[in-house]
Amino acid sequence: MAKITSLTQDLYRFMLSNRTPEDQLLGELRRETEEKVGALAGMMISEEQGLFLRMLVAAMGAKQVVEVGTFTGYSAACMAAALPADGRLLCCDVSEEWTSIGARYWRRSGLSDRIDFRLAPALDTLRALPGDPPLDFAFVDADKDNYVAYFEALLPKLRTNGLLAFDNVMWHNWMMDAANQDAETIGIREFNDHILGDPRIETVMLHVGDGLTLIRKL
Image 1 (cartoon, one colour):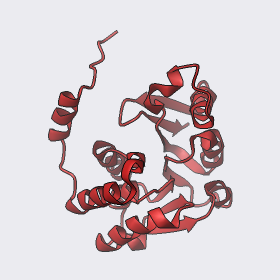
Image 2 (cartoon, one colour):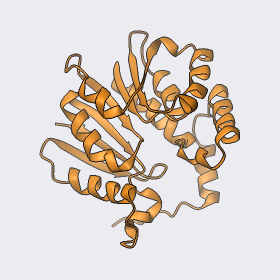
Image 3 (cartoon, one colour):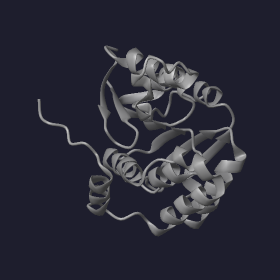
Image 4 (tube, helix red, strand yellow):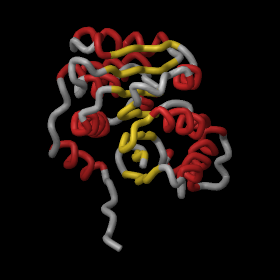
């Protein structure tokens, strides 16, 4: 087996220096999030993860994209920027306070016409989606105890060869400790187990951010 490189802080800084720089408005959104929500800013995806999502959406030529868990809108801005003019990103969240921060940056970036924000429980929104047009891509970064339910709600709406991306699947290594029995840790464990061996998909877990699982519908 090839040796896995441990990601030290120095190596992480080196990694960030060898990528396309973060857009100015995205940097402003990141900093405002850190100022407004304090420690909760850790819920925002990392810079390289945002770029990775943007590249995936662009490379797929995706037009129909869903996000479950929008927070302050950073990941939504990354994905919406990769959509064509007739593409649409459906964002699902239950916090008007947090998402209102992102909405200002979507307007400033000229992305508002590509983003359809739904302030409602995500499972209600997902289950009500029509099957046509099918989804090309979905990114899930919400309540971990509902990951299995989100997966099962999204997969039937996804086109063949479409992708699902689930964040935080390494869950800060907390799931590796059997003593951790909170609902979200259990949810991540159940999700990781649930998708293994599913004949409808193929899946890979990547060491991006706090762990990102990509799922392709067969």
